[in-house]
Length: 174
Image 1 (spheres, one colour):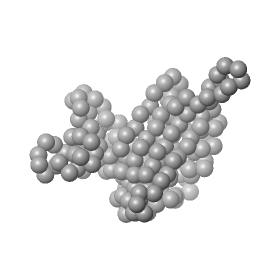
Image 2 (cartoon, rainbow, N blue to C red; image 1 turned 60 degrees about the vertical axis):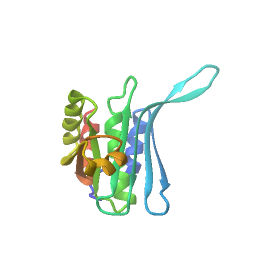
Image 3 (cartoon, one colour; image 1 turned 90 degrees about the horizontal axis):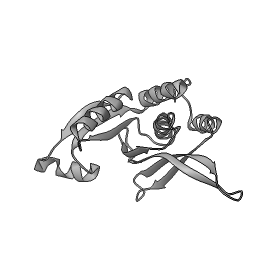
């Protein structure tokens, strides 16, 4: 990995400095790949000296052992004071791929549930360095990919190093 890019350990330290907890849950997929879940939470005091974690965001995906094998599927960010959460999740996902897998490119789907939201997703993913790969529509030829991705939309691909660089810059500004 390039020396100017943060490592996963450095991202975890940055999260701690912000009062956040960054965790990755990685599993094996039938010995042919990995499942990935990245979560960011904040510790919150409860009653009677009890402390609980409040989930602020998470990303789910999987990776196959190929250069273009990272698949980023579902991302959610919620709650107050979550400005850095998305950038932290993206950066951690890309750093993990670069450090622990042969993956150098990632794919995701800008789902087309609503046209306005779809345009926002495409713009957001472009800011992370993703470029359109192909449209998944309603045709029979797209059915296997739609089943895999969970819907119709624009399939996009991005470089993990560039995604990490852009996410780290966003994180610095927040």
